Amino acid sequence: MSTKPDKRKESGNRWLVAAIIFLFVFAFLWSVDALFLYIGLGGFAFCVAQYLLIRWDRKDDHRASYQRTERPRSVNQDSFGGNFRKLLNRSGRIDGKTLAGLMISSMVGFVFLAIILGIIFGDDSAVFSDEELLARDYYYAGQYDSALYHYKLALKEEPENTYIMVETGNCYLYLNRYDSALWHYNRVLELDPGNTDATHNRGLVYYQQRKFREAIREARNVLAGNPSHLDALLLAGDAYYTQAQYDSALVFYVDAYDLNYRSAILTHIMAYIYDVKGNTQQAIVLYRETLQQDDSITDIYIRLGELLPGEEGQEYRNRAAQLQQGSGQTDW
Image: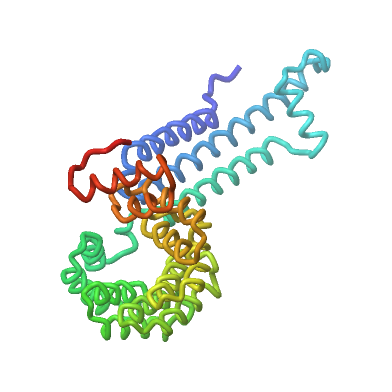
């Protein structure tokens, strides 16, 4: 009997050790950089697959040797794993190597999925330049002058980046520099005519300039491609409402409300429109809903006190008097 070591067994153990090392790389370094995540998962999957492939080869060799020297066991003596293996072989003719190949393919597919998810949900720093990251920080902090400065630097690096152009236009919009904002939105739409952000925001500029017809046109252009675009619905509604075209405004406000947008401003305006139109029951419902979001609006208490009779209305009249006197007390 030979005492020569089984080289394939040693090789299999080496693959198993390598898999454990890659697993530690993933566990301890994935948060440092996405590259370590891909290396760790990919290396672990490949090494485990190699280990399983060697194990299958050794089992096949052992089984072949056993069948040459021993009488086969009966079906009742087979293990669950053996029966399962036979079932696979009979139904689909899947041998050990084929099964290992399927495992390798599955693991490689998992690694590619991890890479794709990493790209989609990865750190912004992997997508944005340093100047753009600084600009975004200032932008979300409301420091639009500083944001504008860094967005301009970012545009020098990427002069046709439409996302940066839109954000630059937004800075000008918030700084009330409407001509510059329009220039950037127009430039975006030259490069990307279907850019809904630039289209909607150009409508915001027109609204601020009291060019309501143009604002409504831009909002409708967005809604033609996306009828559920909440900001465009609100823009069109506001443009009509500012012109006291309440029926038209209500169409867009109701659509926004049906999308579960429930700001106190929206419900207050809708209540007022229904009130003006004589639909006081719907107005009362929306006035009350507004107070659930903001219970400090004195005008609503006054109006509900007028609309509701008797003791129910008296509660709102009392609360309105308290707010007018600045007592801050509440009966609720």
